[in-house]
Length: 340
Image (cartoon, rainbow, N blue to C red; front, side):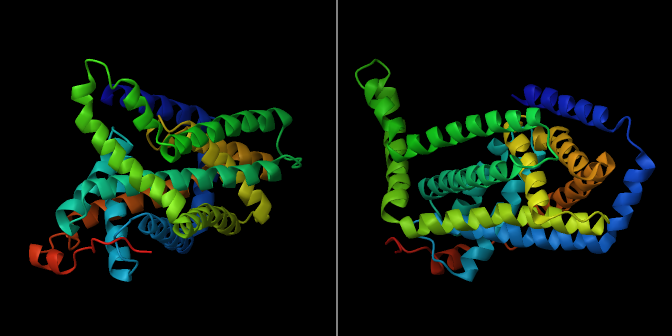
């Protein structure tokens, strides 16, 4: 797996090299300098707000964690750390998600079934909201005269495939299909080995189904916050294009962000979608503004923001107050009874 990730990373870097080899490096640098530290600072601040919406949505998926600022702050730090590891480790999500669960368990007393279910729910909510965001983006894209028909067709096929995958992912959780498959092998020689694992799966599925059917207000709230997360990405594109001296409409900014996120979702096997994300932004910006260097400058600034955020997440790993004493954890322990 690590070797495969390394090969995908090399592929992404080669793709990135092919994208920029014929571009004017001086012009790209001029665009980046035009944004300046003020623009980059604004982008980082905006991303902090975007991340806050993401964490608040995650907080809604927990069954027992209180909805207060103390826990919001804790989850913010945990998520920053986990997402940083997701980006820098060759294991992708397998690097950061277990760390989130481990930190919640070791420092805040959240059991693994609770944290595991919340991580699945948070990922599902993010993906469902992304399908909605991309669907609206596709509707906006269709009448656009900037984008070629062939690109629209590819975007439509990609969206259909992605939407189908996410729908199946949701249905597996909602209708307990994992337990159903487990029961099919119940009479096999492997049944006694699977019994313990199936018990855990069943308990996690109980939490998932409960969230979707009994806690619909939280489900809707988490979806709304996740959608706001994607919308703030459009705001980021819109603001950056102002700094770059080539203002675009909010609709055009939505098209650029939707294309970037669709390609990123489809190339998640490439670490950080390096090369692929840049290609999508360059393509969209070139079609809308006629200047591909604007797209690459935009990509560079967003990568700078990612690097800063990763560095902050790793820094919090070492410098934050994760070392809470067991006494404090016990005093602040989460209630046993589920919240409404």
